[in-house]
Amino acid sequence: MKRTLTSQGKPFTFSPKNQKKVTEIISQYPVTRQASAILPLLDLAQRQAEGWLPQEAIEHVAELLKISPIRAYEIATFYTMFNLSPRGKYLLQVCTTTPCQLVGSDEILQACNQTADVEQGEISKDGLFTVFEVECLGACVNAPVVQINDDYFEDLNAERMLNILNDLKLGKQVKPGSTIGRQCSAAYEGPHHEKEDV
Ligand code: FES
Image (cartoon, rainbow, N blue to C red; front, side, top):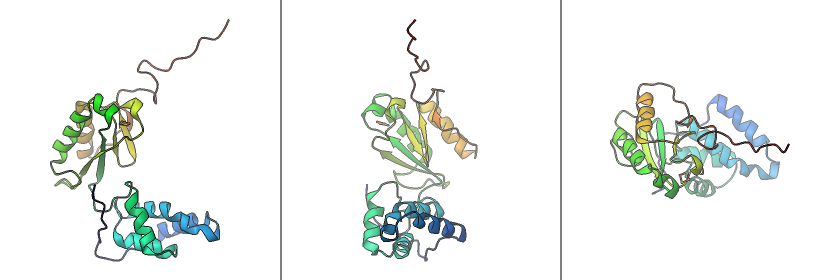
């Protein structure tokens, strides 16, 4: 995946509400170690910028932490959780690593691509969706898995994926987690309890 910086064409500053959060976050670090606040500050900047991190936001965070811009660029371009170009309202990260692939991630990716109807990484015409194929999301027990913004949707099949996407299009709330009602990562038939000795 190409990870290059994108300008938003205007300066970035934190909103007054987020500026308070910035102060709080920085205060959690020792005075000589405040550069370590870079990850939460970049995350906050990304949330303020509606899901992506403009070059100006990265530079603003570097300035706040008194570090050189190149150090902030290195971090922002390393972690794929930072989106370096605009994305749709819903970022669909479809896991296609082996455990998900073995239980149907191909058809889920197809459902997402059909709905977005644009190339991977582009924004759908209605502005709602951007699709990325990603490596293991670390929830293989509940494969196949798709991450939509901050939430995981698990135990998917094409039909349930399409239902979720249609609900998002209609502006409905969707419930994260297992789509078959599985309790966390318990067995399909529910948690097992060892018999107590009698
Ligand atoms: S392989 Fe898909 S979550 Fe691990």
